[in-house]
Length: 527
Image (cartoon, rainbow, N blue to C red):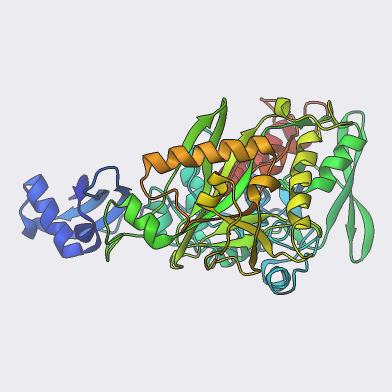
């Protein structure tokens, strides 16, 4: 027989099959000789108490080994009919990729356009940012196949379980090459070193089934007739073209496609200013975070992974919190055009570097921002982002060398005389980040850090360093859509989607939104 059993064990027991069998035998009062095989199907670490434990759900084969029950649930993608209707998908990030895959499920041919390059060609442009400070505005950490997550994230944890089929999204990643562990772990993570190959496999599925994928192809405009999108205006190395919209356009351009926001605003297509979060990247030695989180001077030891943390408080009625925490990771330059300074974080699959980092950010709402001439503009939050990015860039030498300040020096308002080693490859220089940030952001961060230091002893330390700035936590604009049809509130056939439209925040939630928009397009086309 097969039984799914919940266990709570120490980390070594969770890692060693023989110990795990003995633990199950003891806890469940089952003769150990009856246990023929154990498969871990769910796993989470509980480090809330001094003794760290691992919560498991195991699938136990008792008395005999029955046919393997696979926890994977792959989606079947069949070749499209030769007469399938088209739909346009703009952007090959997670929202766009999963929208294209769902369109194939629905029997619709996706024409997937991406302004940047494929993941392999994109890698060379990304390397130039660190080596020479050269930012290609069409191919960087934000633009290109896989979107902002391909080379700057890889984490699949989401709190969006009520918003869509998380398990389906994880299974699609798995069937395209991600480790089985993402179906098991409470905080699944592919790793930035593994994710590009998964993305390529998704592209191959789209093409194999009859979809069309076009790189180096930028959306320049929409052709709208009688409040319905009829075609898209595109630019590519071959020139300009107009392509029929087919059943509709899924607009999944990501949170950094500022030219799209300008185009929509200039074209009187309704958009809205949206709240964002702004701050810095905070980098600690991973050994220190392990010691703090696992309540041990020895750190994580042999059996535990690099520790994560999550911080949240409120200061003056605004949230101050950690964002996109990267254990065993490194910080990367994330500007999308020259003249900007933006940083982000990432982790390889083994989370094996000696640093941890996270965004440490402060909530900013539209009513907090007053920029002369833009008081009522839907682009004012974007302008607020840009002003910060330009200020941080101007503090440097014209490269991607970033301003930095030790954590305790930031709280005390003093220049750091020296800086520690860092994972940030373009280099850092000592700066008064507490002066470069808007005063309301700096003050809230200081008080937030003081509280985090009280909650987690040792967290507030000059061993940690702030590297600035972190501004691309989410889109500064929302493109409003009908809650039922998911179409733009004023334009039929246009589906604002994912992070860039203000409806997602991370790889999985963006993928869910892409899936939902493609489903909605199919449903609306049948009306």
